[in-house]
Image (cartoon, rainbow, N blue to C red; front, side):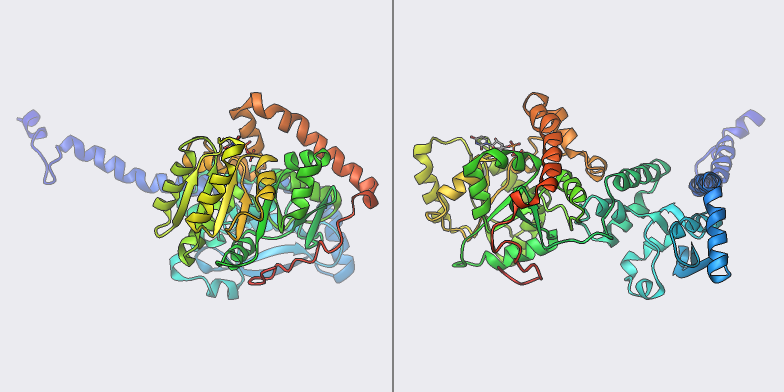
Length: 462
Ligand code: UDP
């Protein structure tokens, strides 16, 4: 009888024995929640204690210095933390170094986490729309996803969007990864906020515009109106600059381009060696989706020329699926005989495209654009390297965490070691050596007259 009774389904269709399991499962939910919440906090406490312990002699000196200067050890900013509650971000009072070390007491106290969205001032917090209010569900942190990307110049997505993704996807592993990437970013020279960011960078006498992704997209929209004067654009990384070092025609093509833009972590490190700050890494691969979005909105059409047969077309179809209304005036592969160049130019002109993207690799694409400069009609022309291979899906791009620590080049090296080893393993150190030599002999590498005057304020088409 008893045995039978146990088999009678309960009101929700479970057997009695199942109820016990359900009860245990129910009890587990708050325990699980507690652990999910408590584990990151426990890690924060342990790491904060560790930092404070390891730096204790310095802390002591710093406290004494603050007390001698202003008779109190700490100062603080009042910011808004988790659930918008007021928190204190501590720093040592007075002047001098290591003031920021006191922030680890705020972590220990629980006002701040090590990883989390940037803490906001009450005014900043008031401006956060309801749709982004999820950022207040977690403790603000010393290291935010936006900050990690800013350090290597790839913060091309809005901070609020990155914070939202962070809150929804937060995990202990993710937090530790972000903290580690932040450390790597610091080792690479950080965001360079304290350094001057000149309007024009100078690598080996080639002027590179020190600008941002957003400004570049705005500028491209401004200057691609039908009938506007020609704008030739090149993206340069250390490999391009190494080629330009000894290749007279390529160097001339870069000097003739209306804009040369900084591509990659190598330029960022080169800037650090020169004691200047790179505003952003404005590379073609990250620019392309932003350009497509803006072109779709403003009715500009693109022509994609280059890569293996079918690749430009596949990239075009992918982007049209992502950005409805995007007009692709035409596509064509990059494997045609020199005798066919005239037909290719005619096809581009007949398509009525506003912006031409040429992906033949460096230096071929830039030389080709220079050779056909007068015959081509699109107002804007850009050399974009292996871009279509990525957006067609032929070659996968490095994961975001690798890009955040400036290792996209290492991923490319692993993908095609036979072709890339010379470019990266020899090219990267060679580039840094040449930057160092330029520092010894700056007068040998002066920029041509007139360079360095481009106006990069939004809407100022040069
Ligand atoms: N390519 C081309 N025609 C050629 C040689 C190369 O269209 O005659 C294409 C090639 O298929 C690839 C791109 O040019 O899509 C060059 O890629 P790479 O990775 O070398 O570009 P980079 O590293 O210079 O950006």
